[in-house]
Image 1 (spheres, rainbow, N blue to C red):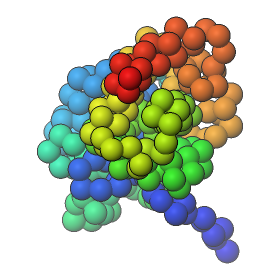
Image 2: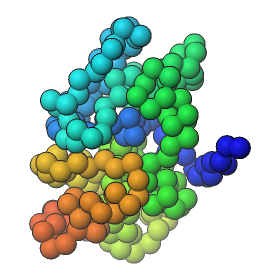
Image 3: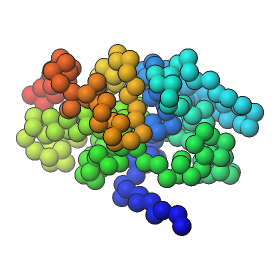
Image 4: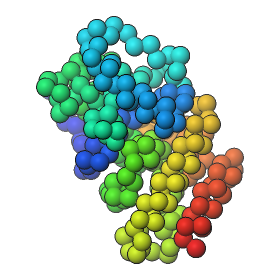
Length: 233
């Protein structure tokens, strides 16, 4: 008898028609997680897909942060350059090709990353509503506690809920800038930054999370706080 999978109420993988996420496919296991480098890899996904069933082994070890993790070769842009996702998912192609991936159909269809549990429904709705770019969105999914810190810091600066603030575009601008700054900060760190389980994330978030890290992250917090002050003075 198969176990019943408790799916989260709000799923972050492909939240709308404008953005998507393939963090769990190992996208951020590259040593270089700059937007330009990851975009180049995602754009080349269609080429890798053209080699489908002829890829015997995708060697990602030279570019990986963590050689115990995996960068799936079958991820790419599903739409233009705004929606990363699985190119062999049944919603993206004529048939389900995930059996050719390392993890197979069952794990790929039933896995949900730590952000699905760490972020409550209100925070998930905030993420989907106020973060438009796929790269910034993925950073929030990758490091959900830092995203929580950003949202709470903005709320403190405006002294109200985000939905009650009159200038929604400024909130979007602030979150976009903060997430890009956090991405640059994480890119300067050599440690692995993606984890499949909450326990792994909790053990390692001290290396990069501005919410959970110690005094070593104070300069990064101050940089982020300065942006908030400039935008909401």
